[in-house]
Image (cartoon, rainbow, N blue to C red; front, top):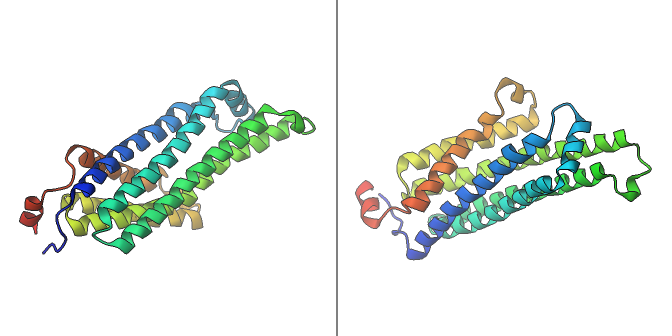
Length: 241
């Protein structure tokens, strides 16, 4: 039997904000990664990669701005979700917000690494004493560090979504099937991301996209649901109890 009160008007508004923040953030980061970064970085060719980002500096800086925007969106999302879910479980909602904040911070680190790579590749005056080949290697190393930052932050992201999905399940503000799928997909991301950090060969056994893709699909669905349908009404919650 559900013991939680029906969602308030402030919770409903926050849920819409959460849905919009989820979808916009995903669109921004997907655009930055697939339409900019992956087109500039050439696997196995540091020289060509650095030439690309220096030649297309404005485009590369757009990717940096997108990463910062994604981090801002994550902060807006965690704030909105806290408003919605804290009446269901304040401690778990706070923990989820803290974990999501840690993940948002990793995207700031990604942006910093991008700018560091650009600075090395551009060869500013005080770097003229370093050989071009060494600068290219250092710049490529900074770019490689962005992947490390992402996979260090991923367990925090998985745990944040696992906690939120569990609170969604307890509250019944969303359909039960959606909350359960979120618990499963997010818990898988949390566990598998940790396994990958400890055992890098785990990434060879499975496609790395399977770590976060199920959770990403869940987030997309829940974002659309919150934006279009919002939280369930008191009558619907009572009928499903």
